[in-house]
Length: 114
Picture 1 (cartoon, rainbow, N blue to C red):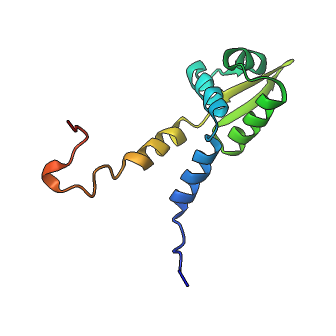
Picture 2: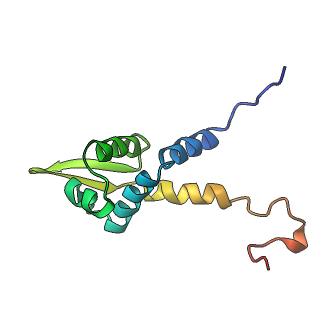
């Protein structure tokens, strides 16, 4: 019987976050919110910018929110959505690139190939 070693918490967290980003529409929504900056966008404006509206947008916002990437806040009659996890996004890219070229012999290491 094959034994599977437990996954380090960092790998589990990264996999969960990447799963939340595993949709073109969710990536569009998150990208629009990152572009909008910390003030975010109203749900209507977010839908207009991404073409994702109604229950589909609600569904995607729920998944992104559960992953800790976005937040929603009621301001008066509007719901404002904002990307809140800039550090988490940076952490994800660092997770992927941290060991870049680690298995390449020393003289050939580096990011420039060609």
